[in-house]
Image 1: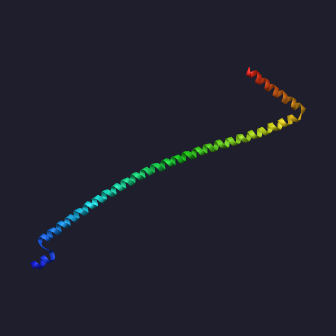
Image 2 (image 1 turned 120 degrees about the horizontal axis):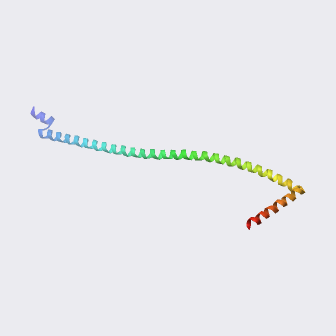
Length: 129
């Protein structure tokens, strides 16, 4: 009986060595799991930090986009107003050109133009003194 038992289970010393080895493996497994858990927690923290930085960058870009949009809308209004003023000035200039052409065609208009040029010349002389 005892021999068969020792053959199957091993000697008491072998059983103790197996128990120690089993205990050692269990400790090593526990240490490995704890180390891996700490590594995973560190990775998650680093990823959280990276995501926070990414969130800040995306928020800044969003704010910049809104600012650019607002600025473009304001400039669109300014450009439209400038276009209207330019168009009005072009029409006014065309009217003035037509009037000058008519005045140049008439002899009295030529006299008036000479008078205007003379008055401007006199004004320049007087203001330069």
